[in-house]
Image 1 (cartoon, one colour):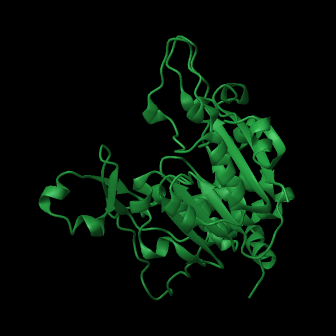
Image 2 (spheres, rainbow, N blue to C red):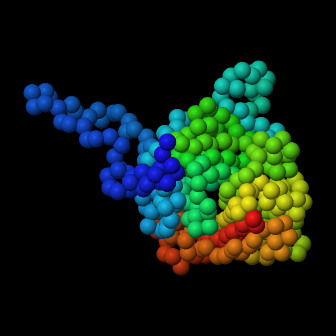
Amino acid sequence: MPTQFSRVAVLLAAFASPLSLAQDKPAIAPPPASQPTPQPNPTAEAPAPRITDKLKRDAAALLPIVSTDLARGFLGATSLLSEPAPRVVYRNRDLGLAVPERVYRTMTPEEQATLTPRACPPQFYYETGYGSPLVYVRLLDLAAPRFSRKDHPRLLDFGYGSIGQLHLLAHLGFHARGVDVEPMLEALYSEPSDTGSIGEGLAKVYTGQWPAEPTLRHVIGGQYDLITSKNTLKAGYIHPTPPEGQTVDSRKLVHLGVSDAMFLEYVHDALRPGGLFVIYNICPPQNPPDKEYIPWADGKSPWSREEYEAEGFEVIAFDVEDQAWVLECFDKLGYTGGKPREETAKDYFCWYTILKRKD
C-alpha cells in the first residue's frame, strides 16, 4: 500500500497543469462531417456549477500562500472529492432536533408537523454556513513543521462545522474525526458514503459535548497526533468580557460542560506524547462599547500560558496575529469583494495558539 508520503506526491501532481483543475474529462470530439452538428436547445437550463470544481479552483488560488508539503497535499486532495447530491434536512431549532429525509419519512404526521425542511444544496455539504473548508489549510501549514508524520495520523477537529476538511484529510491517509454540538451536521452527514473509509484514510463525525460526555470520550478515544479547533475556542465564547452594564446571551457562547482545567486536562490526555493542539480563530471587528458586545469577535486564547503549562503543555506559540495570511486567503477566495487591503484590514482579525503535549 502506498505510504502517506507517496500519497502527498500524487496529490501535488494534481497541480502540475492548470488544466487538471479546469477539466475532469477530455474534450469531446466534433461529430463526423457527414452528420449535422447538433444545435443547442435555447430553452435548456445550463448545468448547475459543481462545488467540487469550485473547490479545485480555489485550491489552485491558495497554493502560492502555503509552504509545506502537507498543506499542498491537502489542497491537491480537492481533485479526489466526490460531488454530493442535494439533500433535505428537517429540523426543529427549539428542540435541538434535526433528521435526514429518510428518517422524516418514517415519522407520524404529527411528528413531521413539528419540523421545518432545510434544503442543503451541494455547496452547503462542503461549506455549510462557515465558508470554504480550504481555510483549514492554514492550521496544517502551521502544524506541519512540528508534526511528526506517519502513516494514518490521528486527528480530531473540535467544532468541525463542515465535513470538507475531514474528507480532504482522509484522502491524505489521516484518520480524521470531527465533533460538534450542532445536530444539523449529524443529519446532514448521515449517508453511509459520508463517513468511514475515504481514500486511504477515514473520516468520522460525532455529535455532542466532548470531552464533557463520558460516552463521547470513550468512542472518540485518544492517542491523537493533532487536535485542532478553528473559530470555536475563542476567549469571547468561553470567557466573554462585555462592557460594564452589558450581559451576553448564553445561547451565543460555547459551553464546555467542564471546568477550564478539566477541559485542558482531557485535551492533553487525548493527545499522544508530542502531539499538537492548534487553536485558530478568525474574527470580525468588535463593536464599540456603546453597542452590543460580539462574543465571536474576541478570538484570542481563552486561557493563559500559565494555564496551559499547568496541564502539561509546552506553549509553542501564543496569541500570534495572523491577519496578513487571512486577508490574502480571503482575497483569493473572493470574500473581500475587491476591496483594497487597507479596508479589509478593518474587517478581519486572526490569532493562533500552538501547544504540544510534553513527552
